[in-house]
Image (cartoon, one colour):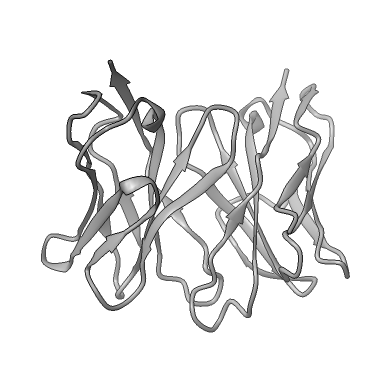
Length: 114
Length: 116
């Protein structure tokens, strides 16, 4: 069965610093991979997704992620953090072609300090 | 274009009661999925409806049931509420047949259910 592991439930960075949120997955078939962001009292917003093709994926708000099959990883990065990036981030995998269901990690809360 | 909406935003129930949560999918979307997000956890897939039929279910007991209507809106019903049912319930809609290419899911803001 597929699963997602997010290393670090909390990550703190200074404004302007590099953001790195880690995600590893397990899947028996080539997966689709996603990063979602959740702001307080809101639903989930898609940041970026990998389905096929180029392994470096660019998303909204300056975020990007690289699919590394050999490492079963899909880490999220942003070169320079903004205060507005403070939120909960979820990595997700989908390999059930019958339902598109998403399997989420437990999330990483990003704090950005001035 | 109207996004996914859910009602109510908050709900308080007591153990043993029944609850119905509602979701209006994004305009034109024919597939609705429901997720449960417990405090401090990632969302967990409950089930999906495609064209009014259940199309896949996660590891949830039968007291979690759903409906999808001809206008593609959906309901999640939970019977015999337990304390552990306290969570944020998220609805997501998508367009397309789930057995073809991946169809992006758009999430609503959720309903916060508290069971006392």
